[in-house]
Picture 1 (cartoon, rainbow, N blue to C red):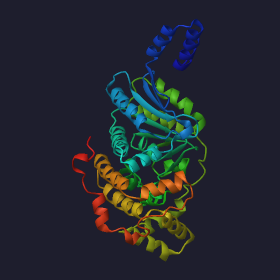
Picture 2: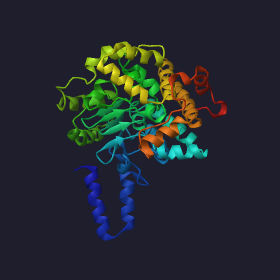
Picture 3: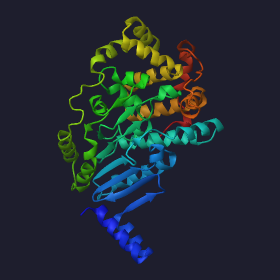
Length: 387
C-alpha cells in the first residue's frame, strides 16, 4: 500500500476519534508541509515532492511560493534522507503558466519593492535548480511558460507529455524571455532558440522534447505511475533516474508518428534568423517572400520593438555565458523594463484590457537606439543580483 493511502486511512481514523493530537502526529510522521494552499511540499519515501497548487491561476508563480520553495530545495539538497526532488503542478491544465505578472506590474507602477524582489528571488531559485546536486525531475504536464520554464528547464530532467504547451511569449508583453532564457535558448539547435524567443512560437507535446526543451516524453496517463516509481527508488543515482525515465518513454506512443512541427522550416529558420540585428532578420524575411517568412514578419511586427532588440542582444551575449552570469544580466534587463513603458502597456493590452492593441514606445525598431540598449545592460552596482 502506498504512503499516500496509509496517510488517508490514518487521517480518516483521526477524524473519527476527533483527536487533534493524533492528526499532528500523522502529519509529522509524513514529514509533510503545507504552505498556505499555493505550494505543497512533502517527503514521500526518499523523494521530496513539490506541488504548485494554484490551479485556478494555472499555477502561476508568486513571490510567496518562491520564498517557500527555495529554502525547502536547499534543505532537501543537504538531507541524506532525500534522494530525488519532483516538482509538478496541480489541476491537470498547467505545470506553471508563468509568473504573477499582474502583481509585479502594479508594484512597478507604484515603485514598490516587489518589482525588484520578485525577479531577484525568482532568478536565485532558477540558479539553485540549475546547480542542484541531486536528481531534479520536473513533470511539465500542461501549460509551461515563463516562470514555469524557469522552474523546469534548468533541472536535469524535464518530462513532457502530449498535454505540454511550451512558449516564451514575453516579447508580446514588453518583456524578454527571462528566467535564464538567455542561457538555454541559444543552446538549442541552430537558430531555433532565437526564433522561439522573438516570435513566442508555441510548441506542444513531443515537439517540446524534439526541440530540446524537455529531456523526456511520457504519455500523460503514465505520469502518476512514473511518479510512484520515482518515489520508490532507493538511493537512486542520476543514471537510475535517467534509466527509469527512458523506460517510461519507450512505453509511450502518443504522437510518436508525427514529425517535429518545425522540421520542414528549420533550414529557413537557420538561414533567415542568421543575422547581426533584428532589422537584418526582418529584411531577410521580407526578401524571402515565402508564406512562412511572411507569417513570421507579421508576428514580429506586433511585438515590442524594445523587447525584440533586448532579446536579440540577450541571446547573443548569453550564448557565451554561464547560467549565473546570464541571470545577473537578465536581472539588469528586468529592472530596465520596470523603468520603461512597454512592459506596463503590454500587460494592459494582453492580460488586463485584452484588446491586443499595445501602443509601443518607441513604435519602431529604428527608435530603439544602441545607447538606450547599452543602458539596459549596465551593472546596477549594489543593486546587482548576487548569489
